[in-house]
Image (cartoon, rainbow over all chains, first blue to last red; front, side):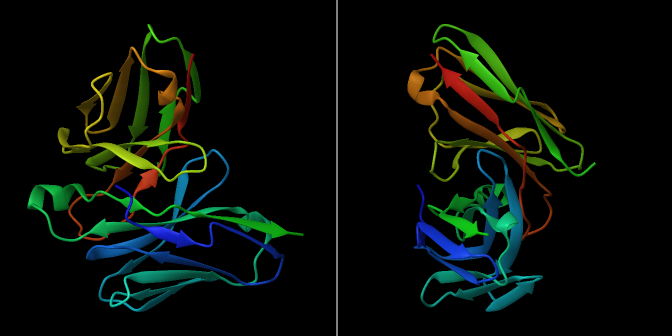
Length: 118
Length: 114
């Protein structure tokens, strides 16, 4: 089952502006990851934040995690046309048997479709 | 080699056909995954293999049969599929032995069932 919810479902901004996407989840987690998917292609890992971290940066990306609110946000600064894609948060649920934890299944949010207009 | 490859890129099959999807990686990852993704939806986990053994089966119909012949290769055998099985099938792999790490995805196989 998909436990993550993302908003907005779609976001359209001008090149150079910042884009913010939000993700909420329902159960305890080990970590939360963000992935990008260009149309009809495979997913590319962007950034991972652990459950004991609150903020992480990678280039133009900034991720925050609030475990008390079970939410995360992804900020892309100074957007470019090449950032046009779908963005998914994905959680690695905590708990479960060691066998299940070792398999480390990802549970994806519904995704945000980001369009950067030139 | 830091990529996951999938073949074929596109596949069209009838409901009575038998076909296979192939996934390969040479990164030494011992966890491999199959996902199904419908248009404008997130990927849904189907199967997880850990050290070549089936670890998770997310109640997938038996017309989908996974196989992991060795640590680099993952297959998905298809038989008697339905039109609603048309989707993008994604393979992914992950380095085991660490509590926190990302999955590497292949480009997917676009499957159409007629």
